[in-house]
Image (cartoon, rainbow, N blue to C red; front, side):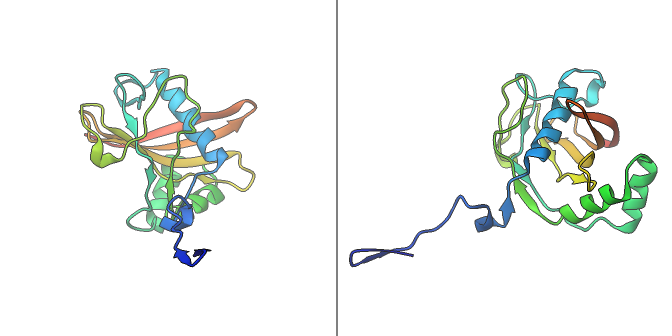
Length: 179
């Protein structure tokens, strides 16, 4: 609340992350998402590549909490699918999935891309939606989910990445479902 003369003005902080219980991803998370999308743009994976830009998907700015906490069984299944993943990386993923984040236009990509709320997406390319990123304590390993929805070929992937000298590289991506 701010007092201006005899008038009282209530200031509502609409753009503060805490106003919505959301925070912005860290610079490291932006670097991870960017590296993943750059690898997808190379087109080496086929129909399940998640491309942005012209004739590609838009990106949802919303990183929503999971509807249910990752169960011990689901974490064990991930460990089977990604034997290289460290336990602390999985623990980090399990704990971050209860938070919501909002992406800004900070991805480092070689193409123009758009952020758009899912309810506004039209057309055959749909939108890409990221989960939060789980990392190990040293910040050298990352795991997350990414999906392409509301499109001709929907897909969800589980992605494991590793920090390398000049950024991040995809170690493995496992298609969870495709429709």
